[in-house]
Image (cartoon, rainbow, N blue to C red; front, side):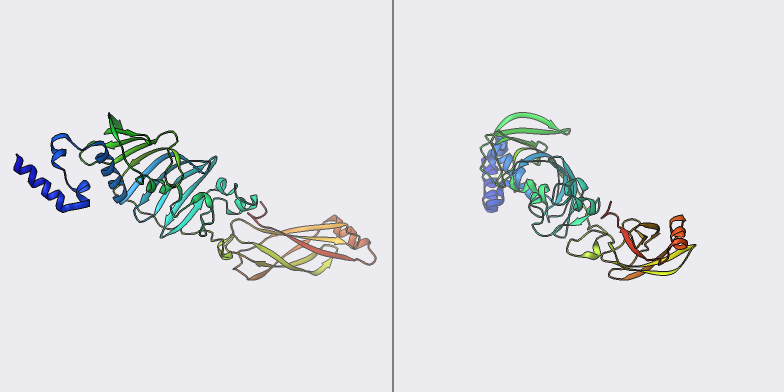
Length: 332
């Protein structure tokens, strides 16, 4: 028996710093790992896991976060996040962060931004939204958990999501570690006053470890620095009056697109007014899809009683035309 224990000790010494995660010490063989060792192995497993799914809540910088995220060791992530009362979807792929959620954008800057972005994916600029923090934003909160000294003690057995677990505790809070031969962190509940190095507190997080996780950048998204990625924004560059008689007056507007593809049906309303600014009638025409920085003419004819009465009764027939563009979602 002594010979076997000495052999095991030599193996662990050879492994050096990896011994905690890679072998069982002679003491473990007799008494089982200590509470600190269980916690250390669970945190080591968390750090080395290829994929981690976490759900729960925490507070950071006075904001209340709730989340349900899957994160890869390489930094890719996908999940649902709520900051206070604003919910959004978060996606990180290839180091680029994308956000989708009109509620989220309504808390930043001009309300028109939220209306413009709507439910489109938006590629964030570096440090563009301070609430998100690092590359995986709130979904990366687990990265800061192991950075603290451990002085754990066993509190007993538990079950987390149907899995047997050991409850451990110290002044920082409680950990629930799987008790099935491979210690893994299943739940963390932080104690009163405890803060992670990034300032998070009041953590209650559940963990599991999917075997597969694939995420890719959205097929279409808004990039704030690229006007072509925004919804079409049409601008009238001028209006021309064509043939006019008592039956109607033909009007043509030149329309240019300052952005990308349309997000809805834009319209051009062409109006006629008399020299005294009286209304003589109007007509509306749909604006077709126009390429970025290209212009196209749209036409319609103003007719009706006001125009006919003006045309038939006026001596000098002084009148002019104006055009108004309705651009969804800019004017919604």
